[in-house]
Image (tube, rainbow, N blue to C red; front, side, top):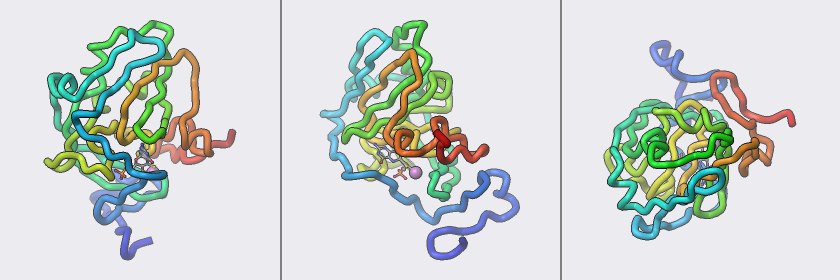
Length: 198
Ligand SMILES: Nc1nc2c(c(=O)[nH]1)N[C@H]1C(S)=C(S)[C@@H](COP(=O)(O)O)O[C@H]1N2
Ligand SMILES: [Mo]
């Protein structure tokens, strides 16, 4: 499917492109519905469910350690983008600020605009996952999830919740927006966990 929007990976990159994926030119925008416009001053992140309730403001997030991370990005609609450079707060650093109940095994991520997506706690609390506010050295544009999105590099990009505003801790599995609409519960690109057989 080479052409205007895709290029085939050369042999040196082939082992970084999961099966059935093609390299995108540029950085496509994939949003269901409207793009929320949220100013940094109005942004916050609510911790709910099986954890001590807490709300992080923008300033409180900026006071946590800031890390840079380069990661590949794989959309289930078959485009991938390699070496995307982000800056933000590691999920593991945020977790250190939380008191999570031992029964919690799953999380639901909530976003401005109503989008949701689910993860197991172990897929969420990984050191390479983070809340990103900077893309390629610039403030994260609204269409890519600014002012703040999650980035979960090891799963398909629908797990990388844009305009994130909540993390809900759960003791049971639950399905987010795309997962209820036929996407796989986990979405691991190397296993091609694209759609569900539920
Ligand atoms: N809130 C929200 N987050 C979202 C989406 C969305 O529609 N709403 N789309 C998902 C999908 S399917 C993908 S591929 C990536 C796309 O991110 P991008 O638009 O920055 O390329 O965001 C994910 N996060
Ligand atoms: Mo996607």
